[in-house]
Image (cartoon, rainbow, N blue to C red):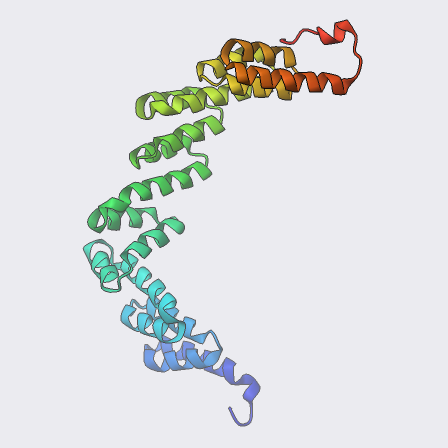
Amino acid sequence: IKQYHPDTLEETHGLLAAECEGEKQFNAAEQHYINSDDAGWKKAVQMYCRHDLWEDAHRVGREHGGDEAGNQVAYRWAKFLGGDSAVKLLTKFSILDNAIDFACDNHHFDFAFDISKMAVKERLGGVHCKYGNALEDEGKFDEAAEHFVIGGQPKEAVLMYVHNRDWENARRVAENHHPDSLTDVLLGQGRFAFEAKEYTKAEAFLLRAQRPDMAVKYYKGAGMWQDALRIAKEYMPKKALAQLQKEYDQHMNAQGPRSAEEMLAPAQA
């Protein structure tokens, strides 16, 4: 065939490989798969994996695909074994930490939890947090929050709830697990209320968060200078008030002559 029908050579190798595999002549099948095309070695690896011949799968992967391919086979091998045998195998190939990362990246969280609990307990918190991120992406916010808290990152749960404007749960997690994040909750509520033009409520939240500067920023951005100046006068240092007054004067000068009614327009809704 090689001499007279070279165009069908690779196809023939593929057919012979499948035939040999069916007859459990794995060594012959391996050679035919490897000769079937440039990526034929991957087919040989898959064959050995299908028949739970992991040592051969690892050998072919490493010989033809280098350490990365070998490690991927070792990971699949360990996942097949499970338990203490998986930990021993991953330790043998010095890829225990990498296997935990790979498991998390591929959403194999049960496996990541298992090998972390058995061999690398210090990685458990990180696995919980990565699982929390995955659950958040799926919209499972309460489950995600539990894993953020268990993983030692309660602030992530608070910020997740703030992002979704779930103020009750954000406040609950903050009060129970991360009091410093209560400020983030109040700031989020203040921003949301300001966007909704509920200025009195927004101001109250921002002042409770002890962030009058944010109230000034929002009022100034909305052109509500009188309210910005009022907040600065009541709650901010004189230097900040003077700077704001200067900005206001520059703003007014840039506007040109205005009527008294415009200049004294009610600031707060």
